[in-house]
Image (cartoon, rainbow, N blue to C red):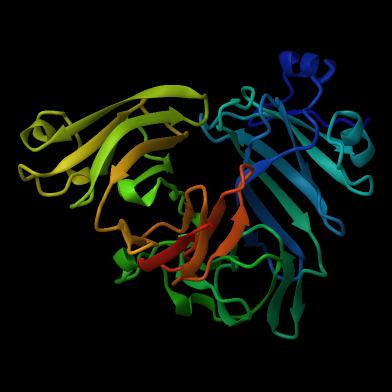
Length: 411
């Protein structure tokens, strides 16, 4: 096995060197992951080099290692890995595909190398994950090169959430994949997208040098501009029998602001919330939750910016957690049961679910014994492990989508 053990932000320490000699615990068969996002920062044109920041959550229950493949045709350098919950560096090494198989990654590609990361803690077994950030520089002149006086980035991207940042002083002239175009504070242009299709995004973009013509600093329209692909909120609805008007849901969210120790969920007008619960997905720790209404909200020592105008009917559910550390973040899962006769009901013998979705990733699971008949918004349709119909509705735009779903009882 070829090892290049690194304790990030530090030279190799004695404890890290000792860990390098310790056999890794066997992985469960295969490897699962979620929430992947890649940011490509194009370096000086002509070098073929781009810096990659890859965010991913390892979800194999009980796993203590994560394997990241080094793409064929690319030469990797300047690797750095950190735990996103704490911001602290992690120990990693580079292994061959054959070695990765021997270490438990049964589907490892023997023709590529892998970055093997020692996770800060075992992956929780109750739905949580280990969030990591892998930084590396790739050199790949086939993907990134000059064509006359234009730069070209031509690379199929299998990760579903991506951003490509042009070098400073270069203006975007062409992009073949529907994308947001956003200018960063230092003047660089960023191309960002959510790939909502089943395959790779065959991204090709071109740019030309314009020097300082693009300027820098925040846009006059900054409050209307947010990178949708990097947003971290998603939600899953579990519809109960429609006669009850009830649906169980959970929504996941990553809190990035240092010192924040509470999440406030405002109950929509017309809905009733019950059975709140919450989980720290980084640790598997169960969190406290409380329902507050009217005047009780004002005495709860909550950030006023997180609250709507308070009336006697205003209702919120508050989830409290350890304060986010400097340089770290916290991934939360909040669960509740809602009753909303207007949003979810029977009309004759037809199940009707109507709701506006503001998050990038939304899913609806029909109750047992019901067959999908209509979805007003394009969705991916699948079956859950217990045979229920699931609709995944991705919204790459910043506005809300108005969704109507209907179903008929199976006979």
